[in-house]
Length: 446
Image (cartoon, helix red, strand yellow):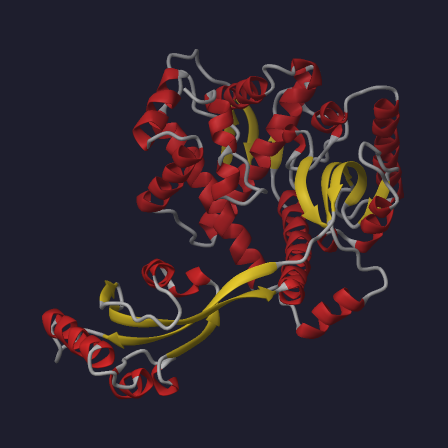
């Protein structure tokens, strides 16, 4: 096998958003009678679920066990994540969000491909590790559910205007380049008073002191961070500088790889950042092709065979009789976007018109006409007109700025949503040793 099953699960980050991290493989068969460790609204979390989730994390860190906190702290961190996941799934179900078997199959296919396995091999690996494949599918269903909840929450709340993009790109505080970051978040509970804020700040300073005293940053994140990526060591991966809140970007700009920031106050709490690495942007040159096409579509009046024959006839009129391509396109092509332009497709990246057209154009020389070929849209004839290298640096910068602003807004909207969701929920941790010292009881919890 390529990797242990715990690492197979991490591949879901490719298929699903970073916020939705899979925790457990599946409940072990033949376990003793479960006890309830937490009540989450009208649902419960069982000891077996917690044990499996903890075992999964320990397996992920099998070669770096020294980074894990004491078992009781690890159990608290994992349980907090399970609670938040359960709350999100409940909310999604309340909103009528459902996941089909086909959706789950597609996600499993993605996990398998990322690990160079077939779905059947992935299933065998899950079962070889002692897990239940049915429970594994349930876990993935929860992840997809949370992804769709996230989309539902932010889609109507986040918009980005051209003026916002202009303001970002022309701002004196705008910083280009990319940074690889890790972070630790010490949250401030919703509606916190001065004492609660001071307690969060004290915990942040304690965490920073531990790091300065020699504790590995990843280990400190696992032990102290309240962020959903705590169990991954707080690794944020590579981020463009324009994706980072300006207040944090100013601090990062003064850091060198390996540096750790002071405790920074943010909207949701205190943050400690580590700059792992950085790299600068380069000019973005993109290959573009210029081509034109004629599309003949089958219809109620034109059978597939007739569509093919018409394409063949047009091809011979262009190649053998030297009739004008543009004139024939205007008269015969059924592509609404290019027909009136004489089939002119403009300049475009090779893949933007689909694999079938890209494959044909790759085989043509300039001004050469393809033989008729079929795609899902119908029968095509294409003529390659030219190729160029286009400097897309400015456009890509605008696209990235739009994405960065949208991501930043989405993150804030969903963070606020999660805080409200948690503070308004009934969450009762029944096992005293699993209650973190700074855990805030949910609404209605005794």
